[in-house]
Figure 1 (tube, rainbow, N blue to C red):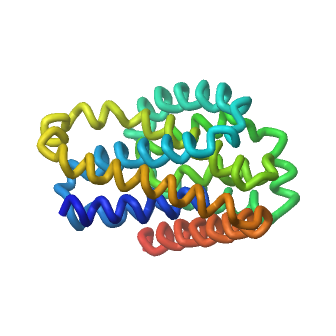
Figure 2 (figure 1 turned 120 degrees about the vertical axis):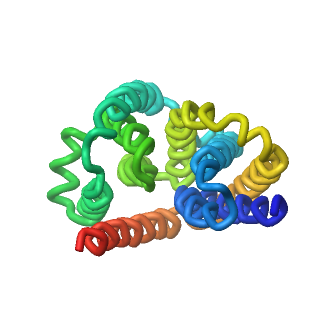
Figure 3 (figure 1 turned 45 degrees about the horizontal axis):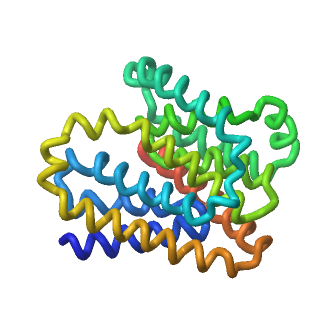
Length: 239
């Protein structure tokens, strides 16, 4: 099973290194087929920290570091705020709101121009990291804004990788709750970490050779498909 999950980690990390997202969502959909439920979130988090950190490392010169301080401050505030509030609030419709925000921000210029007045990385950091403790698919929040503010595909993917690394680090308290089970899965975790790093390296090489405008277009299209899928899922579950 270690080899199989290592290959899965490689594949999902490869996808994320090319387009900037999607690998983590695919990985968390597959892990319950192989792991004890209590281990899914911690092992997913550890693999994603490795995947995102290595993706950023392989593209270090492309990271837009000036955006990081605001994101970090927002992340800390979001972790505290959402950690206290959201466990007592219904979260059913949060993915619907995220999906709608992504679609309007990408394709409806009046909304995009209006929201730009309030859009900053303090808020994005708070929402992405805070909501990431409770619901999935929050990475596209920052990616949606980065595709508008940065022109280079490599800057978008590399900066998003740094953001997601810190967002996943916020899950460390969850890891500590099941530390004994994680120690027993040591070989499996090592295999997945190695797969994630190799996937990041390979995907970065592929991305460097791709056309900038085409890849930005692909990222926007995939973000839109993800957003529509999130919205449909919420609507189906609520009926």
